[in-house]
Length: 185
Image (cartoon, rainbow, N blue to C red; front, side, top):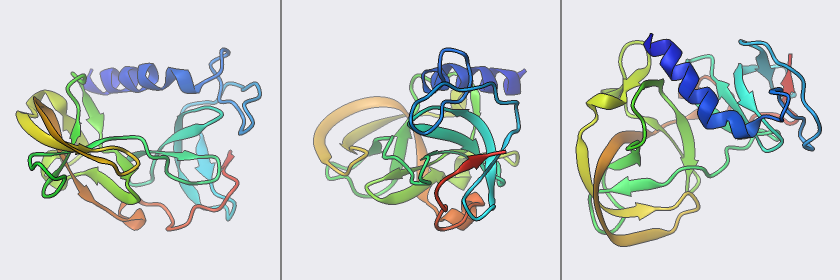
């Protein structure tokens, strides 16, 4: 049941990335076609970079060969998507991501903030690479760094924050450089 709820939440969150036929749009935003579950995504070198979850003219949401969800644009670049949160007043120390709105189990995720690649910390994921967001405690943040790197101090809010840590492409199961263009088999 948890797996179904996770898939439903991914579909709801990513619905805007699909065209109105429910298919994946091409890189220029043209009409899409239906894509079956577990469709393999490859880079221009023919390297399998995962299974397609959803996609649109801007980004593809992919489940990596190591079972980690990530987003890239059609050129293979990670978009700046998420804010990092800190308990310190100057955007230093332990890094967290906000998941106040989540109520389901979901897969580990990788993302870029300020040019650094992060994923959920190994201390918060289970042996199946899932995280149960209902078990995440409320933590008081004191600063946050925007996806593009701007630190804002003095924002004191208690919310569910998930610990994240720096990672590498190889720990996600993808090449250091994803060759463009990306293809969907």
